[in-house]
Length: 197
Image 1 (spheres, rainbow, N blue to C red):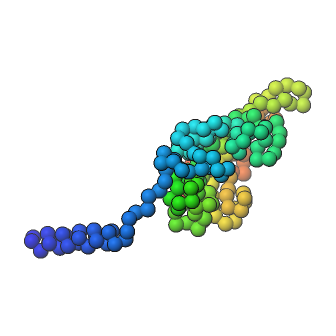
Image 2 (image 1 turned 60 degrees about the vertical axis):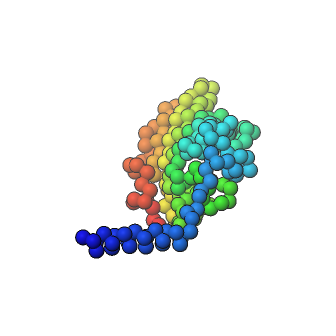
Image 3 (image 1 turned 45 degrees about the vertical axis):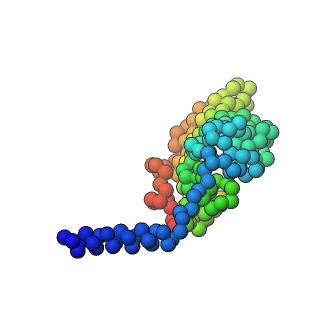
C-alpha cells in the first residue's frame, strides 16, 4: 500500500514537472479581451454589430448588402435586386472561431493543427435567405432559401474545398420548392462522412 501511494505520488510529480517544462499554455485572445479586428481592420465588439454580425455567438442576422460589412447596396461588389434580402448565417467554430489563438489579431479559421489553420474555413456554415421580388407580371412574390455547406478538403465541388449538402427552396411563383434532389444529407457531417482529412 505504501509503495503504491509513493508510486502514485512520484507519477504525479513527474506529470507536474513535465507540464511545467512544457511552458505556459498559450492564451487565446477573445473578443471580450479586445484588440481583434475584422477583415477591413474595424474593431470587433461583443454582441451584434451594425452590420448584423455576432462573432461571439457565431451568427449573422442582416442583409446581403451588410454581409460584406459595407452599406453600399451591393454584395461583395455585385449589385442586384437581392441586396436587401434578409440573410441569416450560422457557423461552427472551425468555420470561423470567436477567438485568436495564433496572435495575428484576427479570428481563427479552421482547427488548430490542421493544414489550413488559421486562414481556411473548415467545419460548416448555414445560410437562410428570405426576400421579395417582382415577377414578370409585375406581382410581388416572396421566397425563402436555405443551404448547408461543409468543408471536405481538397477536391470539393464548391470553391475547391467545400460541398453543399442541402438546399431547400420555397419560391412557389418561380416553381421552386422543397429539397434540391441532388443533395440530401442529414446533420452537418463534419468529421463524419463528409470530411476527407
